[in-house]
Image (cartoon, rainbow, N blue to C red):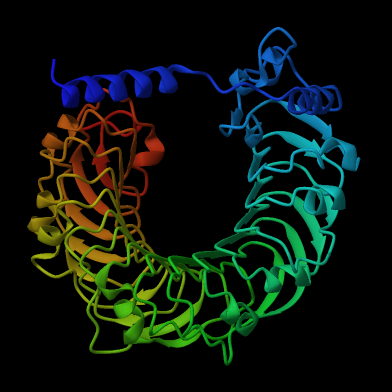
Length: 453
């Protein structure tokens, strides 16, 4: 063996040996974690992590625990552990975990307030996830001048009061998720403009009043999602320079007038999710081009008028319902829905026939054209094998119910009520009730009581 081969073999052997060594937990870290366990109330029959913490196993091998090469605990994942009661508030439970940078206690049943000690005793903490619990009270404000926090997720709790001012001073903040709480007060979006690392902002479903006027996001080059549903917002924030934005939710606000055409250009064509539902928009500013990669386009419950907007070809969820569109459905509309799973344009003022091209939307699971003024026959759509819900009710459709609809074996909901349909109702294996067919004077046969001649 040559010397170079020998050294290469020795190097590989040493590396293999070192990689095989398990990280040894420091005694003080084990004692801290065992003390933490003793101060947590949890259902042992549902626990998969805490239940296995004991003296006989070194703590770096415990479920939910990750250590660095020195034996210090760096990650603690206690999500989905059936923990209930309060978060331990004593500094002694936390201050010894000086290397802990990730802590998750999400998806439990934690109650009580958020202890200040949890926010001040962990100097290395970067990620804190307490989402989907039952925590309440105000989030304690504190000095964050030396704070490393990058991701804070308090989604779906019962926190009250104003958003704590310290979040606006977290210079490294990447994700702020405060949705589905009971926060109150006015929030000026421009305060987030200096958080240059901000990647995701979620404030939906609180009792906040968000002011988007003069919000300067020009320095937020990383912004990927902005979720501000139900925030009493009266203006769309200026997002024109956001080249990485993929998700926008401004639903259930007080936005009105035209939907600006520039909003479809944010993200440099990579926008994937857009929800502007439950506002007071009246039209789409022209010219506009929907981004090609858009997966979800939700414009329902506005007052949009004019022609039906032609969606991008790969959209999966498309909701135009509860508006004031008055046009016909374009002849080739079904051709652009080939990848679509959900399409609803119910409760508008559409006229004319349902185009035969709708059969080309063969990926649809849900099709809702109800509550319009559509006329003509039900098209032959027996090829739409994945269709689970079909609602054509409250229109002026005529002719018979096509026999080939019985080929839709996945169909669990059917409503063709209140049209002008006639003839014998085909026999569906699903056994739809008379409610699916009522209001059509010309229909007969089961499940209706009217017999066919």
